[in-house]
Amino acid sequence: MRSVLKISVSLLVCLTLLAGCQRNREQNADLFIFGTIIEIKLWGATPEQGDHAFSQLQEMFNGMHRDWHAWEPGRLTDINQAFAAGRPATADADIIEMIRRSQKMEQLSGGRFNAAIGGLIGLWGFHTSDYPVIGPPPSQANIDEILVHHPSSLDIRIDGLQVSSADPYVQLDFGGIAKGYAVDLAIRYLREQGITSAIVNAGGDLRAIGRHGDRPWNVAVKKPGGGIIGAVAVREDESLFTSGNYERFRQDQTERYPHILDPRTGWPVKDVASVTVIAAEGIVADAAATALVVAGIKGWPAVALALGLNQVLVVDEAGMVYLTPEMEQRMQFSGDVERVIVETNTLTRHIVTQ
Ligand code: ADP
Ligand code: MG
Image (cartoon, rainbow, N blue to C red):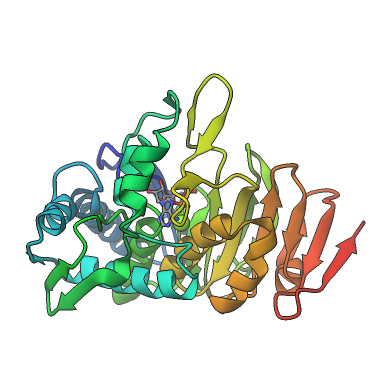
């Protein structure tokens, strides 16, 4: 996700009620969160429902930005300070939920997703909104200083709303999961308002429910470096998230160091350009896409299997596409795309040439 947390908060930049202003028309709003525009589309809601929902959602997003930021002072930085000092802290229900879900993703992904590596992410200079970060990588000695402690979200103890960490090097960074959770909370809110067809789309990372009138919602699958690989017709309630190594990175004279780190080495991961995951919940799709970038071109099928995911598309540094048979069925490719179908359960590969 766009560092949860970079961002200049908020503001309803644009609120467009499309012509007609009656039920069964589409209503759109562009809201801001985490430095990203979230486009919300509703189908079949009244203009009053739309107006109310858009302003409430912007309020909710402002609160998430404030409370979940990894480096601007707020609830999460307070918790990280308490961990560093060996003190317990009080969290709110949403932060507790993100900790629990992060713990599960860390466990299932064999540590490839790890929301406790805020120390390493900060060390690499990725606690910023200004990309690219210019300069050489941190020294191996500085990386090792954190790495030897093996910071893990599994070291966090949750007792009601109280959280504590046995390891002072545990520093939470929800950059890989918060956008997914934000999208889930937005969809939950819309449903509570009686809205049954909607899409909440943060620059191609999205969750959609219901339909766009008499057809499904159609969404694009992003291509590393810009453009789209193809489109997917959403079924009733689904999330589609892409994690990439091409937008945010550190750069020195010779090399690029992307912003997704392998928690086991403390270094950025390079052989994958992007991973797209379809799952029911945004929080799962978001965290899984990050985990599969870390798993790499060789490792992603086994990790996808461990995460219980069968709709995955991976693009390597050379632009080659690898995808599961279930994803192949869903994709309407834009033009000829050379690709390899990978069965995650048997790790069998079929080369597809169109
Ligand atoms: P994006 O939405 O920008 O493609 P991701 O969803 O993959 O990115 O999230 C990347 C962010 O997640 C990083 O900026 C950092 O805050 C955090 N992060 C980096 N590496 C990991 C990791 N291995 N596990 C969990 N979070 C990570
Ligand atoms: Mg992610």
